[in-house]
Amino acid sequence: MRFPVEREVHLYLQPLAQGTMPGHREWSLLAGDERLRASTFRRALDRQRYVACRSWVRNVLSSYLEIPAAAIQFRYSSAGKPQLSGESARSGLSFNISHSGGWALLAIACGLRLGVDLERHRAIDDRDLLVRRFSPAEQRAYYSLPPEDRLAAFFSAWSRKEAFIKACGDGFAIPLADFDVSLGPGEAAALLAIKQDEQAPRRWTLAAPDLLAGYSAAVAIEVPQATLVLCSDASPTERGQPAPRQ
Image 1: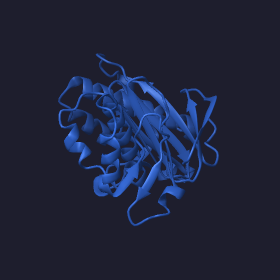
Image 2: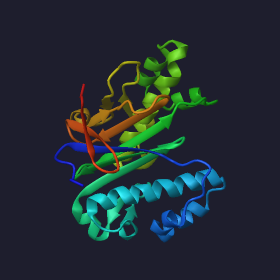
Image 3: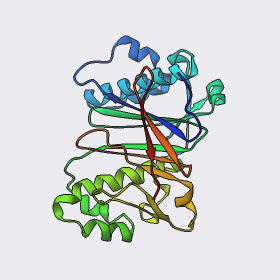
């Protein structure tokens, strides 16, 4: 598998099996800490999806690193963001994972900070309480929309903010109210502003690829302009998508 070229992000979308127990091969690929994490899930379905996702990510990374999937080592930031460790870290590959519902999304780049988020649209009882954690500008944009457009706008905003936070690697140490993203229907994904860093929007690309009906996806990359390449597990397709900046 060729490495992503400069300012290129490879995206992989994977369905996670439902109602099937992880096979021996999937379990055998996981490290001890991953197996321990799997054992903490109370619902069998959540455990199955976690194992399926982690083993799949290892297999995809293995195709780039050309080492066995089980040999890949990870380290984690204070916010839990996984990164390559050991000899694999010398490759310069960066990656990020998100999963929601029955799907997982993986982004891979070379030498770039990036974050990805996937959100299944669903009813949330306390949605208005969560919106109050957005920036004042985002709240005004959200409540200016017709009620029928607000659910999709919420998940557009949430996925874009989550992708940016994950790219920064600081988890929710960055308050949601401290930066603005676009969220309106038909509005291109963009990082509009961030407190105390007026230049940040010029350094970052925020993209919202249209991957699945009923889902919002977002990718944040610390580079002024990037190209998204939709891939299969075998090789990148020819569907390179420039990620426009606003």
